[in-house]
Image (tube, rainbow, N blue to C red; front, side, top):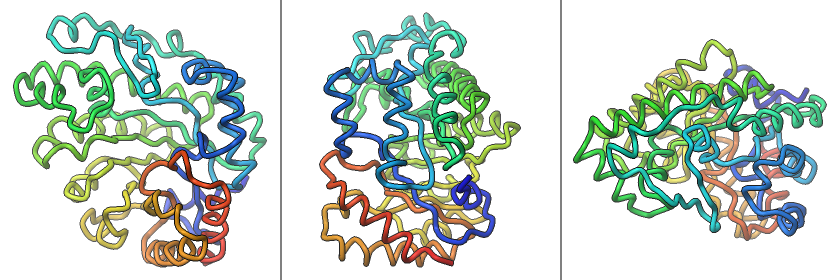
Length: 340
C-alpha cells in the first residue's frame, strides 16, 4: 500500500509530501456528474455500490494519496430519527428549536440506522486493493448541531448561536446526544475498515474562544479521545479558525487541518506541541493558471517540510467548477516539489 498519507499523519519519514483533497469526489469530476444524472444525492449516499464508485473516482483520475469516504456529515441524523433532504444543501422539515424537540431525540445504533455507510467502507477497501488508505469522517457535534437547529445552511446560524447564549444547558443536552452518536458512527467506520478519520468542524469559526472551548472543543475532544484506542490517525479540521489555533492543540487530534487564511508556519507556532498539519491551498487558487498554481504549491510544500508532518490539502473543499486539468496540475506540482 502507498502509505505516505498514514506515515505523514504519524509524523514518520516520507519520501515526498502526500496529497488528497477535501471534496475530491464530486461535481468537479465529469464521471461524478454522469453518476448524478441517474440518482439524487441522498440515493447516492445510501447506495453502497454507487458511493464506492464515486469514492474511487479521484483515485483513478487524480492519483491522490488517500481516498475519503463519499457521504455527508448529516447522514448520522438518521441515528436520531431525523430526516434531512438536500435541495441541494441540507434542509430539515422540523429543526430542533425547543427543549421538547431535543429531549424527544432517541439514539439508535448506527449499525442499524445507517448500515449502508459501513457497507460502503467495506466495499471501498475491497476495491482499493491496498492502493491507498481510506479516510472515514464525521461532522463534529457543534457543526452538526448548527444544521439541526438552524434547519438549513446559513451564513450566520443565528438559531444555534441563540441556543448557546440563551439556553446553554439545553445546548449541552443536544451536544451530549450528538457526541454519543458520533463516537459510535466513527467507531463503526473504523471497524469496517477506515484507516484514518477526519472530524469536520466546519462552523467552529463562528465562535469566540470561550464559546469554542465550551461548546465545540469540549465535545470534539470527547469524540477523539473515545476513538484513540482504535489506533488510527485522527484529523481535526475547524474552518475559519485562525483565532482558535491555541485551542486546536487541545483537541486530541494527531493532525491539525488548517484553512487557507492561516499560514502553516504561523499555525504551528500558535498550536505548539508535536502535531502533523494538513493544508492549505485556497480552493480558489485552482482557478489560476497551472504555472501560478505551481508557484503557490511550492511555497506551501516548502513550509510543510519544516513541520513534524505535513499532508498537502486544500484549505477547504474543491469548488464544483474547478477544471480537472487544474486538479491534475496541482497533484503534479505537489509530486515535483514534495520530494524529500
